[in-house]
Structure formats: C-alpha cells, structure tokens
Length: 329
Image (cartoon, rainbow, N blue to C red; front, top):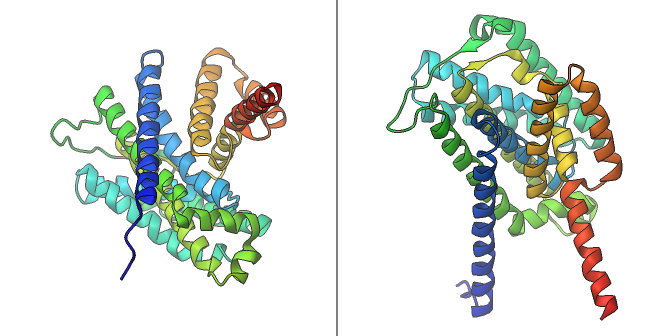
C-alpha cells in the first residue's frame, strides 16, 4: 500500500501548481499586450514558432542533444495535416491528430537509431534524415506533395473556430502554446525531468545507478519530435499551404539561434528567444534590404556577450544584485 502524501508534500505540490498557473497567466498577458502593438498575424506566427522552439529546447536544453534535423518532424506534421485536409476530411482536429501521430511514429523509428549516438554523430545523423525528408517532399513524393509548387489545403470552420479569422486564430494558437508550455513545465518539475537533466550532466553516473538511459533518451526524443509535428500541423491549418521550405534543413538554424538567444534549458528562454528572433527577422526584413547581414551581426553579439542567453543574463544579474545586497548587510 502506498503511503499517503504528508501535509508538507501536499502543500509543496500545490505551490508548484500555483506557480505554473501564474506563469501561464503571465505568458498569456505578455502575448495579449504584444498583440496591441504588433500585427496579429505576426503574433500567430510567433506562437507557432515558439511551440517549435520549446520542442527543440526539450531535446537540446534539457537532454543536451543538439540536432540539425528537428524541422523534419515539423515539416512532416505540416504535410500530413495538409494531406488529411485535402484527401480525408477538412476537420482541423483530425488533421492535428493524424499529423502529430505521423511525427511521433517517424520519431519512434528514427529515434531508436539516432539516440544511440552522441555529440556530432547525433547532430549529423539527424541532418542526414532531414535531408532525405526534404528530398522526398521536393521530388520523391511529388505526386502527393506537389513538389516546389507546394500543397494547398483548407480547414473547415467548427463553431467559432475559423482559421481565416485573425483574432480567433490568435486565440487558438495562444491556447495551444500555453498547453505545450504547461506540459513541458510539468515535465521539468517531475522526477522524469530530473532524470533527463541528469543524463545531460553525467550519463555514465545515471547508468551506474541502474537506469536505462536509452529508454529515457528515446522517449524524450519522441516527445520532442511529436511537439514539433504539432507545430507543423498548426502552421498548415493557419496558412493553408505547405511547401518544401517547411522541411528545409536550413530551417534548423533559425530554431537553434532562437534557443541560443533566449537561453537553453529554460522554457522562458525558448519563448523569449522565439519572439525576439521573429521580431528581428520581421522588422529587419521590412526596413533593410540586406537584413540577413545585420541579423548575423546582431546574433553574433547576442551569442558572444550573452553566453547563457537573454534570460540567463537576467537571472545572473539578479543573483549578483542579491549577493551584493547580502554582503552590504
């Protein structure tokens, strides 16, 4: 018979839940305020991109595995969702379910191979699979994906849910983002999250304690890839169009930069990095002709001056201020 939780354990669990809900309210408030100053369709794109960055941060920031092929699952979710809308049913929820399932199934198969690798071999193996997926979307499965012309689709309206309505689409994407954040935050605070971070710090010691690190790495890889596929389905529903650029291996660079800007291993860092990267790319593209050069310089400044990302810098600054006050007292 399992022991009942003590009063202190129950209060601690309640405090964690209350903190998570407070964080969700803060995120929602920030996006709502941002929608007052930034174009709504940009904010919708920010929400989708932040879900993709959060999924990558689970793999890189928490488990310590750098992948150059994460957008493979993003594109898989987008393409499968579009195919469902075109050939099976215009129901958006069916498209989301099948798209996520396809990304998860692909991750189950490929993850059993790549998680056996580490460091550069892990990153390059994922890049190789991503390149194969890009070729299949561009040429190998052209009869289904329409190749470079792209695949158009249209989701039906269900009740008030109409993806052609900007405010409604924004609300739906924001709710999806909050759900993903809640899931990953719960994961990070759980014993399972502690295990994954322990694998990042010292995998050999975790093996010595008798745990199967392969299983935990594989399961984390599948979860991360499934969430990336979820972001891809949302992209297909909102834009009604997918093309090979959605699965282009170069898209991994944007995701990696976003994580580095915000700070790896920090869910708030993934959100901050995703929003900052998108703001920079959107505003620079409209103001400067050679905006890629300016973007590169700004990213170099952020990477070299803020080694732990923007959120890591703020946390470090706060800790220094607290330490200085304690020394003065």
